Amino acid sequence: MSYVIDRRLNGKNKSTVNRQRFLRRYRDHIKKAVEEAVSRRSITDMEHGEQISIPGRDIDEPLFHHGRGGKQTIVHPGNKEFTAGERIPRPAGGGGGKGPGKASNTGEGMDEFVFQITQEEFLDFMFEDLELPNLVKRHLAGSDTFKTVRAGISNQGNPSRINIVRTLRSAHARRIALSGSSRIKLHLTELELERLKREEPDNFDDIQRIEAEVIRLRARIKKVPFLDTFDLKYNLLVKQPNPSSKAVMFCLMDVSGSMTQSTKDIAKRFFILLYLFLKRNYEKIEVVFIRHHTSAREVDEEEFFYSRETGGTIVSSALKLMQEVMAERYPINEWNIYAAQASDGDNWNDDSPICRDILLKQIMPFVQYFTYVEITPREHQALWFEYEQVRESFDDTFAQQQLVSAGDIYPVFRELFQRRLVT
Image 1: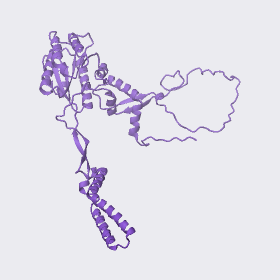
Image 2: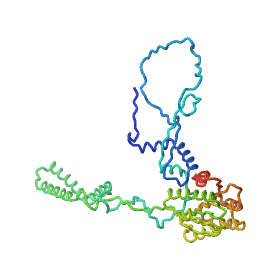
Image 3: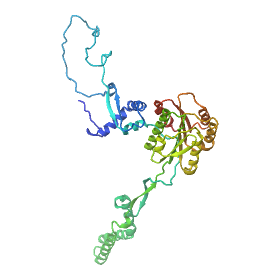
Image 4: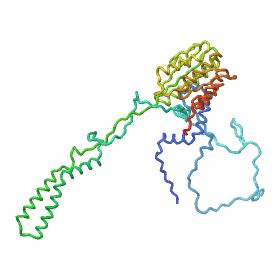
């Protein structure tokens, strides 16, 4: 006889818990499907989830069932064509199916299991294992988050926070302190009374006097209250400021005339993905949007993504403006500073060395991480090679990648912001 006991914490109707377990179990399938979905649909198309297909063979589970049990006697009919050990050939011809698909040559198969993940689940898998590198600086000023911590024992507090053990211990100590001498006298007096009753039973005067003293001492001890307001002790809880990482991300986008509409669209989609990632994963983060052509200008989110302004190309104007904003609004001892720059690499030749020097001397020593993506299907231009010199000097905090098509956005994004292992 076998017994199977279900000790799972959830009941039959706990669908949320079951779904989370299901998502964890088939995490690799879902993650692969999400990556494929990002590459084929618009980054801004996030109002719905995604359909996930899992091969039927991967969802098989062992089943417990009752066997036939007992002794079984089976009589098999004989035949004139085959003997024991011979192999029966597969029947020739198709299976005669009427479906639109092609017949399988394996002789068996299973339909795929298809289910829908929500927008929230889609984004969770989309940004899994991603983070801003080197987010280490802390600052207490302006912190609006607190955590409640134990801070010892207090004589005043909320009745719901009374510490029973400490209260009784205090009451016991008080009773000992106030009645200790009386208890000693009572003990000695009781011993004397026993002696008199045993040795001098006829000495009624002394016995009555000592009995009166025993009654007086006992009454005195009883007057000490079992519990006094002085004894009450409470658990003291205080709100402690919770240091939060303050970070700022500078988004620098080239909108010059050399950037075609297709190139600008790829750049915008990259920054939309970055903006969505930042707002979803970090509460205290500010984003500074900078557009540039021959001159750079700080703009709001709406203008950054949808303005049609264009012109020549001077990349250093954006880096100079970023350095000015850093110095004016974001002290390096309080803020984690990040930057992401997107361009087609086209720049005035005399300006590319200036960009390199600004990065090396005025920006890279003070930022946590700087990423540069070049959107071009052709060979790299002078700006790329100047930035390679920056990467040689700041290998851990500077990264550059090339984007050729929209399908490269998500893989490159994951490579740039992949969670680093702490060593």
